[in-house]
View (tube, rainbow, N blue to C red):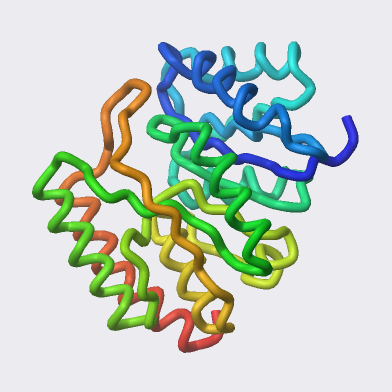
Length: 231
């Protein structure tokens, strides 16, 4: 297969009951992209049959690459997928809760707006505590980094390969999204947001909780210090 125009990185963990259906659902919205697409599936720290299912689908469809990792971590999985991706434009997103049509719509928005980082902004989540937690994290991002967006962790996110290489992302955990936006803000690359009304999980349960939220709040402070030192 020749190099595709768009690579979509899909980290996944213990999604054996729905991962095949999710991957197949990208064909309709992305199949018409001139230049083609690929799906880079990254099963990470899985304890079920997710890696085997992804590997089997990859043998049947040249647009699917399976890249299993023994270790977990959102940033680790995303960065591994982006490193293996071959597209001129790179997307990463949460495989369990993304509508594939949002990827297609966001890609169209990016291509109409010039060099930028494009992302989704979730408008409703039907979970008051998570709404409050997200608001606090977004406020922290604005105060520490000047990142004025409505949903730091909202995915999909899409950017050009050139920008990805320029940003040199390093976060192996949930801070990857904030690092991306902070580095875009630092060099004055526009951040385009596409609003969507909430999301529905394809399956499984969210791993986000109070402990992970506190780690992100504290991690943002460490990220600021790291970036201030030029790392």
